[in-house]
Amino acid sequence: MKHSATLVPRLVVADVAAAIDWYARVFGASETQRFTGQDGKIVHAELVIGDAMLRLKDEDGTDPSPASAGGSPVLLMLQVGDADAVSGRMAASGGTIVFPVSDSPHGRGGRVADPFGHIWMISQPAGEAPEAGEAPEAGEAPEAGERADAGERADAGERGTASLETLTDLQTPWCVHVAATLRIPQHIGSGVTGISDLAAAAGCDAYALRAVLGHLVAKGIFEETSAGQFALNDAARGLLDSSAFLELDGIGGRMAGAWNTLLSYVRTGASGYHEVFGLPFWEDLAAHPDISASFDALMGPAGHGIPDSRFDITGGWEPVRTVVDVGGGTGTMLAEILRSRPWLRGTLVDLPGTVTRAAETFRAAGVADRAAAVAQSFFDPLPAGADLYLLKKVLNDWPDQETIAILRRCAEAASAVEVSGGGRPVDGHRDRPVDGHSGRIVIFGGVSPDDAPPRLSIEMVLVGARVSTLTEFRDLADKAGLEVVAAGQQPAGYVVECRPA
Image 1 (cartoon, rainbow, N blue to C red):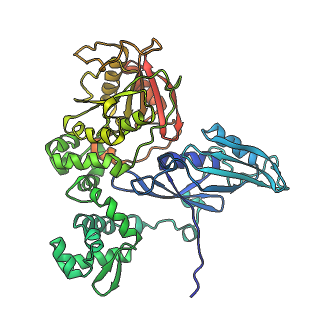
Image 2: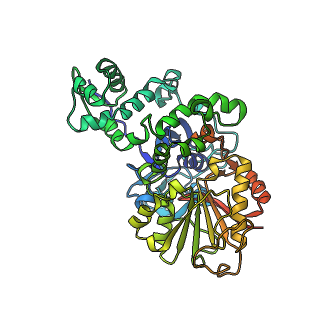
Image 3: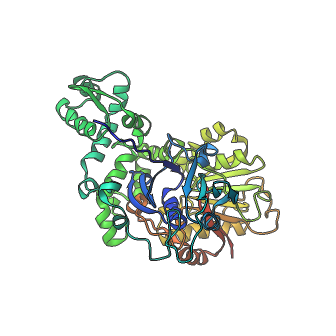
């Protein structure tokens, strides 16, 4: 039997949700599939641009995005009816012109880098000129209201739209969690391949384990080379690195179990995490240091990869001398900021159990002599007088009132050397930044463009978090004594910058 080959580009980006919205705006792309992992990252999304298919995934420890890998060697060619219009729309939406559109013997074309690090060759074949009133082609964004639902735009048989049976499959994710918890990929990788030996190594029932593995084999995870003999395939090898975050006795179990409270969250708008685990999420981590350590690892390079520290701020980085990373976990982002800007000094603020793990992060990055850690809650007065306060993926973990409280602490610290309640000055720093103004607050996460559709995330069921539109965030910032001075999509994500009002 002959099988036809299908080649579909799969782009790795730092923020798939933002990329989907961007490609929809500038190319008129339609989303046909989206699957989200237990950590809230999108592991698979499928778009249709005209007659072409494109797949996306969030970066992780195995697959870095161009922003983390220092660029992409792959060029994506998109044939359109009006290269000038598409290139102009890309640039107006945050893209970067690499080569302006110009004439060639084959038509018109140019190159544009999207905000996520991928390079697009925009091509208009010779002899094709846009006509007035012409319907949008592949690569041309439709007007508002013209974007049909993905189910209406793509035929299920041809586009592979997931069936209801596939979407409601609970067996497969739980089988993956169980295999990861029992460390089946690691056992097979070490040469234990027979079902009896695997069950003995994992300390489980052989009959039940074979049923689990049989289901996963049918889904394309693992191979059964002969009766009762199992081997790793590419999908199973992927579990070797990620299994630590899927294990049910670690943070993976907490995240998997939290989805049982989705109905409670939808009914009330508040987290029902305590209904399953007995305590609210943050209190549960505090009560279980092993789970807390697993969560910190997930948030660090092993789980989310090396963060992209390349983001622009108004006036540039040159006047900045000190950075406070508020709720910065084990310091991975702060370490990258300091490593790429050797004139900076930084202070990490997070809870005691977390910041104790930062020393190794700073040492490995070679910035230990310029980095300090303060063990405290960010609801308490923060170290005062820094030039920049960073909130990366902090606000997306909190409802509105807590968001205001965090922002207010940042506003106090950024605008005063001594803070009511005893916020300590940043070590070795002058009273004010060199430009004579108060410090600034830079936010990643928890804020989205006004036209971005709301998306369900794991933070919502874990902690009842909310993502504010930019307009909504301006109101929250105002209540905290801050003014939004800049906002926009950058390669590292959607960035909002504030100053004390």
